[in-house]
Length: 351
Image (cartoon, rainbow, N blue to C red):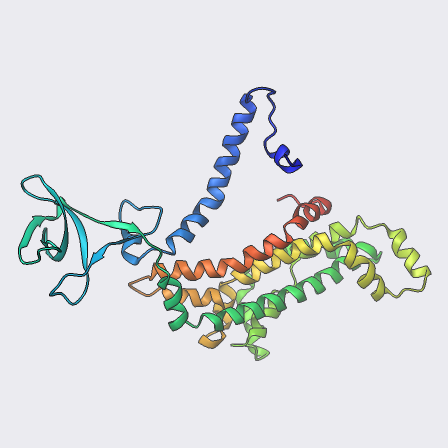
């Protein structure tokens, strides 16, 4: 048994579970269900048909009505389990439904038309994955164009965010100049300003610069984040100043100290900020909605909004494309998750 397995299954009781162990497992199980239950439900529901999504009571696994080819009918007919008036149960194919009455035929002997009340019928369903929920939107929906725009915005904004915030954190943590603490407090104070307050001024600046309907107008106004400055500054304060003084004695420039000493040592905090920045940029909807009006410039989150009409929402396609939009964030989190605990614990951030 590995050390990880021993750690996960260790208990307070020696021979049987202690009450604390039971409460802990219940708490962790409930937390896991609340966190990942909706995500799992959405992923499974992305393989359901539109009718299956609206069915009540809902089913967890995707299923579809079984159909059968009947001679004399151009399209396959749906199979139903029908309770006849004499109490016998048979599998019949539905021809049509008129109000509360449904008309069926026997697939083996389609000559006789059987009429029964709809309450006496139950559709025959079987497990089925609706892959067309993923295929059809890719054929009609500019998924790859929107995906490319989201990648450009996310990668560019994240790289610029890491560069600008790390420079600001380096100056605020390792340089002693007048007004340093006041400047840091002002930066943190901007966290209390709602995004909607700065929406109009930012839009006027972007329009004046001619960045409307351009990806650069989505990228640059969001790169400087007070959260990133605070996170990196708190981590950089743990780096010994003697290490920087030794580098200066050896003739290293300030840029070299920043690039070859500060950044490598602050990599855990930078990785945490990278995860946050990717999540912010990839899931951002409001600011791209304000800046962009041309369809070929839309990000993926704006493209998903196209499945929502005034009177109808194509839930099966919206769920399928949402699952695809979730995959890049999940992959990045998997690769960088080992830095999260180290970066947050060392920077003093409480989540």
